[in-house]
Every structure is written in structure tokens, then in C-alpha cells.
Length: 285
Picture 1 (cartoon, rainbow, N blue to C red):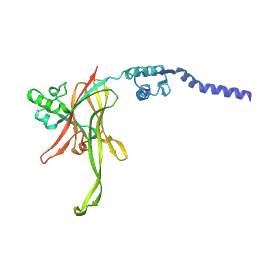
Picture 2 (cartoon, one colour; picture 1 turned 120 degrees about the vertical axis):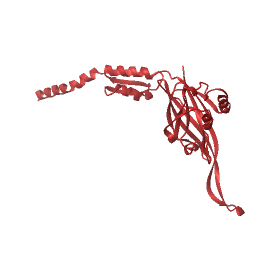
Picture 3 (cartoon, rainbow, N blue to C red; picture 1 turned 180 degrees about the vertical axis):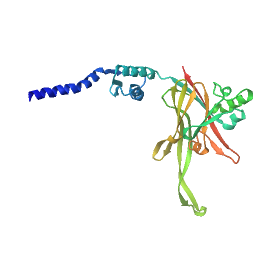
Picture 4 (cartoon, rainbow, N blue to C red; picture 1 turned 90 degrees about the vertical axis):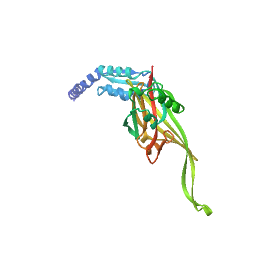
């Protein structure tokens, strides 16, 4: 019996030895991000680590606990050094202009569709201006300046943070039932609801480009209090080169009417008119 126990113990040690040797080959590291949260960095660092180890977040200290081969941990350290950097500031200017105004200047815009019912217009190089205007020379450029200065908005926001680019307010009448009003006959009754709209933007720097997450949002004020309603189906993401400008508009009047305080849109018997946004983006050093 004793001999059998010794043989069994030797067999267990023999089978466990590869696992022990493999564990001995692994290193252990605790990495503390300086500028970004561990939760934010975790997906990218897991991709750098691959299948050669494990990485978890220590919620108490905000650190990353990494176990893996020396080569894998070295890759994680390198990825962390590239990603965990001080956030930079992005300057964003936006102003509403009428589509017919830039068309009258003869500016050829290359329009492409974007998600959420938006379209993005790329301006030719000779039509761009660092002061946030469109055009070429002389009276036409001054006319655009004079007509659009009042609707111009400038924000400076850290990458990864959210800023409000435009805001508006309107009163919406919501009919609820018919009532009989004497000689007037049937009339519709209802209530007026106040709606505040906003266009939020969140920049992320990718090389020499800025990725803009654009998010329309509305807050409805009723008798029950405010109710925040993001237009998730109208959100989109566009990329703009550092220092470049784009035009941002709606593909259809229907989509723009849902955020009517941000872009006015109406239709005549001859053509559809709409406002668009001229957006200027710069990475501040």
C-alpha cells in the first residue's frame, strides 16, 4: 500500500511539472495608468497581450495586473506608453450657412453619405480658410462672413470629452383629443411641450486626423419633468484632417426636421432649401 502511494505521488508530480514549469516562465507586473482609466485602456492592452497571459483591473487602486511571458508583458508596456498620454485639446468651430450661399460662390463640394441620415461635404483646398469661412476672394467672401458670424460657435474640448456645439429651444403643440366648442363645433385640444435640442460632439485624435462623434440630443419638458432623449439613430462619426473643414448636413428633410432647431429645412414648389454646418477642426499643440 505504501509503495502504491509513493508511485501515485510520483505520477502526480510528473503530470504537474509542465504546468509548474509553464507558470515559472510567466512574469507578473502591476501597471498604473497616469492619464487614462484602466477600464478605458483594458481592451487595447488585452489585444496587445493576446493569448500569452491575462490582464485584469484592480478596482481599488485603478491599476492593471498583468500575468504573461516576458515578451507579452513587454508588448503591454509598449502599448500602454503609446496610449496613456496626456489628453490634447481640440478646437472646433461651427457655423450655420445656407446651402445656396456656398453654391453662389461656385464652391464645388464633394458630398458623401454618413451614418444617421447625415452627409459630409469635403471642400476643395482653395476654398478653405483658417478663420472658418468659405470662398475665394472679394465681395463674395465678405458676404458669407457678414451673414454667418452671428451663428458661429467655437469650443475647445479635451479629446474623449463631450462638448455642446449647438443648442436650441422650441415649443411643440401635442394634440390629445377633440372637444365641442359651441357654435365653433369640434376643436382639437392639447398641450404645449417645451423641447431643448443640442448637438453634442466628442473628438478623438487618430494620427493627424480628428474623429468626431456627433450626437443630436433633445430634452422634453412636460408636466412630469424633463426627459432626456438622445437621437441614437441620428448619431454619426466623421473624420477630419487637422486644420481642415467639412460641411455637415442632412440627407433628407425628414431627418433634419427631427432636430429642427439645429438645422432649418423647408421645401418649396421648386427646390429644397436647407442649412448646413461649416465645421473647422484643429488640434491645439
